[in-house]
View 1 (cartoon, rainbow, N blue to C red):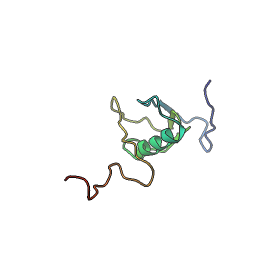
View 2 (view 1 turned 120 degrees about the vertical axis):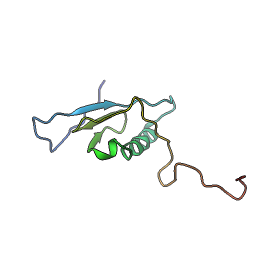
View 3 (view 1 turned 90 degrees about the vertical axis):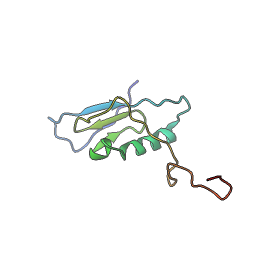
Length: 92
């Protein structure tokens, strides 16, 4: 069953572009997929467009995005960086 979400403030004759997301891990759950979509939306070409999302698998854009075959997102929790900082116990 498709989820439905309303897009407000859009003129009736506006073209919309729908994109579906697929995650490579079966262990993705709602908070992790939401964070991954946040990270994806901060990367080009998504960062240059106004995008609506259901925070699960769908993206809606007012412009057609120029996409490569695949986009890779490195997941990290909000407030952390994409890589762990070295500690005194780590070898350089």
